[in-house]
Image (cartoon, rainbow, N blue to C red; front, side, top):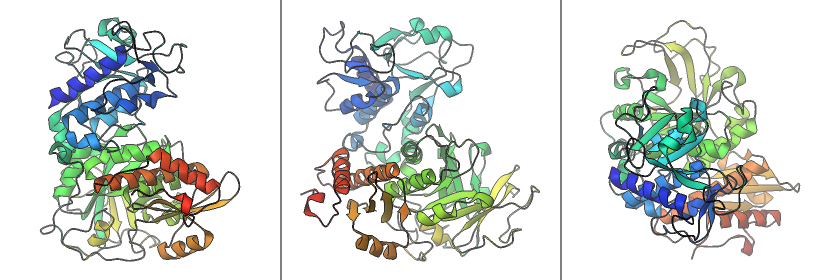
Length: 554
């Protein structure tokens, strides 16, 4: 299987890098352009491998599209699921590729600092990365032959203009190219930072349903032993890559929350190990994303890609802190990110922040579960269902992180300890599927899960627009009376700026089309076309009661 993925990715990258040049005798070609980098994704399909016209790519989009084509060649379920989070996203770039690859079956190959090549030499299909954050220059290439000591690398190099802007197609014969590893300028500079190789075993661990022939895992731990519906308050722990080797089963925690990702670039390298260990306990398990301001859409996509097949088995949380966060203080950014997650998943989100700066308005507008940090001291403390607080946060349905220096049996270092003011079934209800054990989940106003998301915006031309987002209907434009009724029914209405509104509308149509395909239906309108049509209707002041505002899939 690894040979299939690696060889297909290498063959496709080599073809794109040389098509239309003297190597092939002319014809359509792939040029270099960052603004038009996604042109290459039009050929990211097994059944359309041959270029039909001139397109563009940049270094990361060429490699990502080639790797995706390799995955689709090896795993048939992905050939008809091109929006699957298992595939590398369109937002992949050199700063995110390490994480993007490592959650999709690519493992880093050992490469000593003083060695010319990775341990054992290169192999066809290896992804060779020069990440700026790791001391590189921000570039990526892929190995396209079996010369382990000095292979040929395929890459998108530079536009005919000498910068990042170029016309479609290869104008010089070297905008995209193959070059010997020994002759590459970044080899001579010692600028390569890592080599990643596809591992079918790792992929099968990360995406068992796809590896077995399916397209998406939908199971959570079965009911029975360990799924007791324990009454609260519940005591839990949140962990990250800093807790390497931890045995969560030995902690006695009622729930576990694992760090998944940060920004659009970092994935917890222990994510699979820690989530599997948590799920094995039979207790509610969550994953969290640390916001760093690298882009709303990019962060949402990276988070969901990182958790992959676990998405329907865990609840989601967002970590909002000042450190390493370029968006700190921008509540609209946070609001859009949380609502983007809701639009993509349909579930509620835990929103974490410190008590003194907690974004209560955002939590209310997005119907998020409040996860609030409030410490009394840095002294070590153990499990405590009534920790040292003034009781402010001991509110039904909230999570309180009461220490960062927790000490409990089963682990020798500091831990973040938490108390949830609710029952086990309340946490299970936050996961996208029904609670394990055959029902019994409590349903309250504070812990409801809704597949409807109501948003409001002020348009660039000064009008107010209301939209209901659902997985079945996509985006539905409402008039004021309808908006008022849905607001009363759902209990919340999120107000977002126009650019975030556009993003959420697009996410709505993406999710709707995914549902149609999953149910075996025919999608008759692309995400781009549906988004454009809908926004045009909003600009014209039409709602869904108007006959021309919707194109039905017959």
